[in-house]
Amino acid sequence: MIERSPFDKGKSLLIKENNKRFRYLDQDEIANLLENCINDYTKDIIVTVLNTGMRRQEVLSLKWNQVRNGFIYLTETKTDESRQIPINDDLADLFKGIRQKNQLRSEYVFCNDRGNPFNDIKTSFKASLRRAGIEDFRFHDLSIPLQVIL
Image 1 (cartoon, one colour):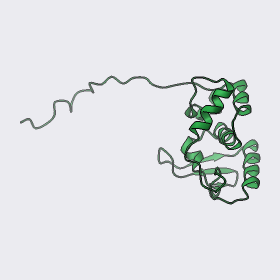
Image 2 (image 1 turned 120 degrees about the horizontal axis):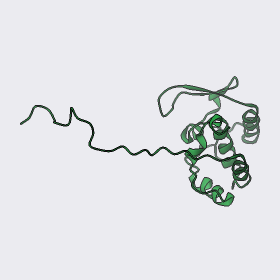
Image 3 (image 1 turned 90 degrees about the vertical axis):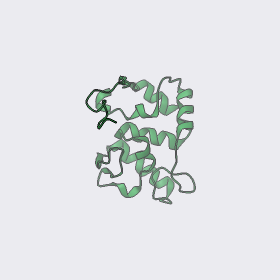
Image 4 (image 1 turned 60 degrees about the vertical axis):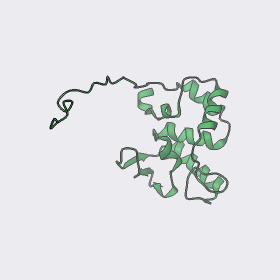
């Protein structure tokens, strides 16, 4: 019996693949996608992600008490680090419209008619992409910061 694994000292035998992806929408594609959204809530979620860079689960679980003083306050994130995201004028107008439409019947910003948060928007997002004729694009690709695009 040996005391230590012979692999403790050496490098991994697995070769790491560079699987980073850099796909984003240009301004025309963004306009086309928003124009071809199959429903309002999908469009609202896409606009929010484009303006904030938030991840899908962060947006879908967003509550009204996290939106205050011109910022979105995220405490439960993928990296377990709290973040504050500034709200620009476009996003402020969007949130105001959502509040008026939903009449604050739910603590969640993005919710269905019963006030329950959406679990996923995969189907409606894919349908919107198909209608817009956009290929090779995932929801995660929306989160690329706008500074990179501009």
